[in-house]
Image (cartoon, rainbow, N blue to C red; front, side, top):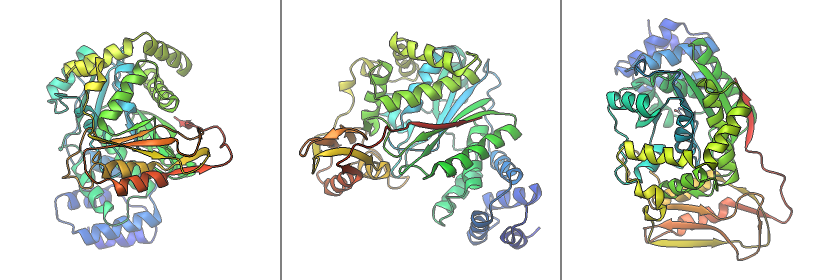
Length: 433
Ligand code: URA
């Protein structure tokens, strides 16, 4: 087999065979196929696409390139969730204790943040002592005993995806539905879950800018799941503004605690309860979505979900005191208020702008090697639909840096203020199964 023939075939719009897909994935991972040939093939895939069969075969080639977690020692249907990435997205930290409260085992693997999006692992590590480097034995034992565990993605899972993703990042070949679908699904399949809820974000802060694109990506991922015997539900949710009021690691943990106390932002609470309800149904705890939603809402109001978060922090070595006293979480030296330049209504808050500003304040990483400042971030006082008067605070920047002008300018420009009130915001667009 020759790589040049595979490139030519895809360039001409042909369907690659399983053998050809395995050949280029394994050859590139082992360093036998050079970057220039792999880049040419990725670009041909971007233009010509892949059939559903090719996409599933690519997914399995990624999965088989590394370790596959064996969760068979965990009793029950193991459920996982994955978000395609957003700003202020702390849903995982809310749904883990919530779903575990109804006895469904949640075995969660998460990543760190890069660029304008945050990562669940960084957020949890803003709780002093919280250990996300669990051994496989500890991970399995915690899920069996407490119905929940969260760990950083092992470096041994899907090495082919890691290497190809890094190449896509620098060759403008990220935005291809089959490439995104196989990349996301391979990590979830290798993580060993039986059932997965996908939170597919759409809007300015997401990979998918339109609902049509989000629907196409969701359908491709649901189909991969079907072909590999995994139950998948894809929820298409809004990322045209950041989720909730807080962006930044410790700030987001404070907001998680508010939601689990029953007093959180409307959008964040609704998206979290929706994802958690689908997980609980897939895990067999409820017959239908509505009864799951109602019970999980009651579990929040009764304080059970917050108690379960406290338990998660305790079993993973974090300071439990921080859950009862969130004001003891890291906080920044400087708070800078951004004021509204006019009277009107908030029509939009560009999520990618807020994410970039938060990163510049220290909350995120420009490159994988950067460290994060847990205290840094942005509090969105006003959200889409809110009325504002000139001079009222739109948002507050938090930073330990001495320079914040660029972040201030980007965050200010991310707010769109118009004279007329916008329509009702939509938080969940569609659910695909
Ligand atoms: N997230 C992933 O894991 N892979 C992609 O290709 C895009 C988003």
